[in-house]
Amino acid sequence: MFRLTIAVLLALAVAACGPLPRPFQPDEKTPEDNPLLLLPDFGGVVVPPALGLPGEPGRAFAEAVADALRKADVPANVNVGNPSSLILDLQVETAGGRARVSASLVDPKGVSLADRRAEAVVQGDTNDPATWRPLATPIANAIVGAIKPEAVISRALPSVRIVGVKGAPGDGARALERSLAYHLEKAGLRIADVAGPDVLAVAGTVEISDAGADTRKMRVTWQVSDAKGAELGRVDMQNPVPVRVLERQWAELAYEVAGASADGIRDIAERFRVRPK
Image 1: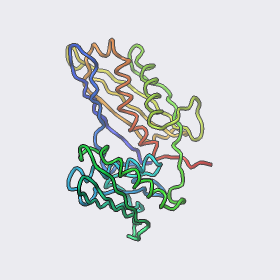
Image 2: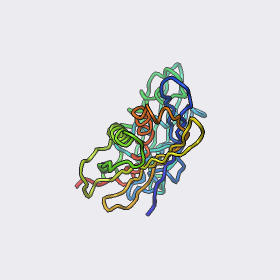
Image 3: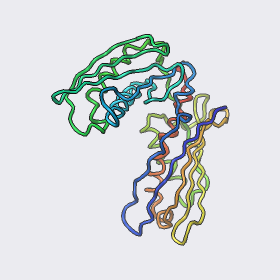
Image 4: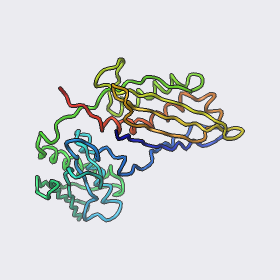
């Protein structure tokens, strides 16, 4: 079975004082890590960078549209798909502070499925996807309505059960479990208290080793398994951590670690969605 592994680098600064830094950012995923590649019956929607907006603005707009599609429960990504993916081509024309967008949805054979247009005032940094929300959301909503219902049949995310964390000192295990449950719920996953056929299990492991007089190397691994115990994927992270943080700031550390882990765990769950009965 294919196993999805997502590595996240923790960059905790070794500072003598001050608040716990919040630099957690997942590494950019490779195409092999993308959940669209292995969706069994619907390859999602690929949104290439918008024509008419060279460089980063074109990609920012495409990212905004893809994000709006995902919020409508349609798998979407920029530039990454599989042979069954639909393609959403965007063409942008700007003039006088306004932008006009033409969106064309085609199937894998190039057959046109829908053409939609939108217009709005564009303000702010054009490199920021948020700047394009006024155009991205209506385009996405129109496209969702144009896709055949059987192609985007609702595929509910499975529930997850946090089955424990091993190796964390003190109250670290409890802090990590609580924080992970909070962030997974924010990411759209339901937390289950008991096992079930549609419930994924998430188990954590913490490894701490010496990395200097005042520093320890911490590695956290989350293993996601299906109801039969088969591993579906992992989220791994490691980095030096100040000793003072491990001794006195586990609540804050756990919050940051869990926040950095949630998207990776959701990505694994996204691949193994369960069709509603």
